[in-house]
Length: 360
Image (cartoon, rainbow, N blue to C red):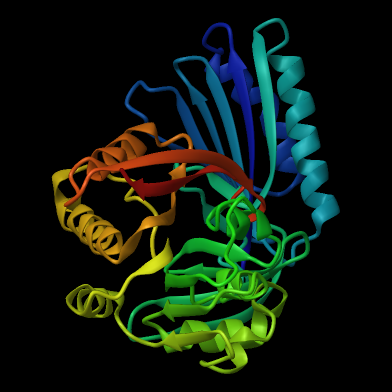
């Protein structure tokens, strides 16, 4: 079962006359055979609910500060034309009743709640985006996270990990940005990819004729899901964990990095596709920042003197979090320089910052 939730807002220049506004709307609700219940708001305007035989629920609120809101809920199978007619009648009547006092009217499309296919996902900076998702392709819980792959008519299949949009089949700009935007020569080079279980980076890097790519991904189920359902991003590189110029290690990257440091193994390029910079900068996030610092420090230690470290940063709007990340770059075991680039990632529907780091 799912519900459709419609909203209609009237911003006023001055508080409305509650009794006359309500009386003016009552005939519409009576025609709909909706039962009215008035709720005590203790002097904060007028609040009433109207319930119809069809299960429709309307919440009418005349706020004392000069705002009138109408919320209408109905079952997904309700007659859309009838619901639209009711909203049209309420909007027309309110425009007549509040004529001369209206600063703005806003009517939003229905928000579908409780649907089998969730179309609403937050951006990194806290905005809610409705995607054109029409089906669930894959939905499994691994030992580490919930893994969803959803199909979007616009973006293709989208990988979502623990509610965070990671990569869509349309997101080649993300992959290109985290690899240096075509400005780097990967021919004959050794490359280390941290994370990247969707296979997008690996697939693009293989095309550039490197000597060897080592990808370290902790979650086999991410690899399995993307191998089947994200082929427009990963191609066939995940069909086998070893190829002519690459190997995929299904392991935690921290022990692997520490082992490489001990052995003195180094790489021309390290690409960190593990996680975004934390959005929160509260003290409880200290452990996450410590993890990022650890990954940064170990990555720089396995980077050759002329090598480069690439990573995603975060949404361009999160300037404080980005600044804190840049502070981490000044606390590494050796001095580094960095540059950053802002790229529009299609399925993120927001600008995203990518970093390139190298030893001084």
